[in-house]
Length: 609
Image (cartoon, rainbow, N blue to C red):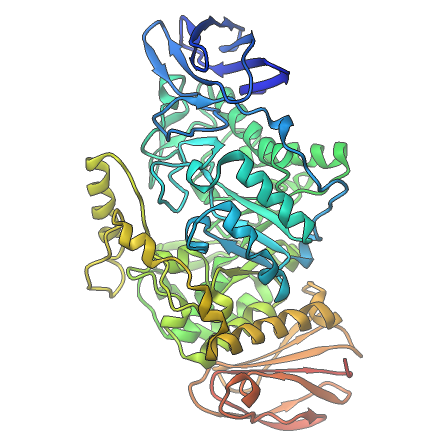
């Protein structure tokens, strides 16, 4: 059932809203010409009205039972913010230029995560467009936008969205997002949109005045859970499935990143993720155009990405947090908070081969057994990263990797991610070692909520050895401090690191052993040193060997190379990358003695490229 306002014909609008308990619902047109329109109810509690003379740009509210006036829960636009009236958008008016567009294959993606508000000084969709050529130049072919659904005020990560169908007005609204997506497609760049189906934002969310969108049956970190399996859940499920369809079809977005699906509770026979996946698959079959679903999940549950016919939910890919956590501890030695469960390079080895470090293994942090083996799932179904908005922004001071490790460590982190058999995700600014933090920020209007957010942030840091006073999330200074300084990418070591990322991506795309994401051709060789990982990828006679040294000093070891002559393609310790000097030989074969520079990566292939 389509919900919201829909312009089917010129100057004619169909309004539909779900309000199963209401005795009366009316459309109150606020502008351009005030009017009140009665709505008719069907058997499932959907109210609808078709109004002539009302089209694009009309502002309206719903009046419930003759008194309560609220914005549309499925509003397409909230130009006056979360508390103001909704606005009709005629989506047919935008002229697209991406006819025939197909996104890259899932296993070809190089994803770049962006927060629109801090990516540029202007913080708009239009300003992002001006930087797309820069991203494409160093190898990015997909941008992932942090949530753009309407949130309170003008500063927010986006996870406080109150109107799932409305595009944030301060970013540029519906037309701005469409223009950005169209511009990306013209440059061969796919668009992944982060969507939040596990909770609604705490300010401006009036969905409870329309129906039981939430249930007290489960509790989440954000309060009562979204109602996916309790009484009247059919209207909520329809709202979410329609939202997924809306972003993919109306805005031409190529993939949805489903936020924190571990916060979605659904014990019904047909999980909501499965229902969304089935809907998207049907769209693919009908339109002959590819779309993807990518889940964020800390469950380590392979059912998320297993095909529906084998009992899974059928989601195309999911984030693999274990890879990040193991890499982080290998680079920093930090073991507080949830990092206490990870043991550096030893666990990173497991993440390279098995994806999940915790595959029904006891977790001291969780105090229970956690996860399940996913060896039957192709490596191309997992997304890995050295940084992302959570892992940076949920540190007290918004520390990027560049604030935690030296320059050699930054290159090593990049190598681990981009030479892995998984889909890589980069966080904005990572590619040049941005010196700006990425902090947590909001611009709520409710004083009580502001204080609750401040207190909540402090509680979150108690498990870590961080004793400073955190920056004020409500302060505009916190937001401004998080904005990227693009001039950095042209300066000294920043410029070198950007070139290093570009070279890693070039090799990943060009070397067959690296571009083929599969488990069968991946294996580890024991170097006899706990801090050294020797990773083979590909099949002979075209294999690649990646030597990663996480030790803070030179490491010498003997390695029985597989048959053939091995030629070095890349060494992060080389002087051209501002390294201390390459220690690994340019060529090797047979039983070889290697000496790897501290915190370095050396890449070899069996044949010249």
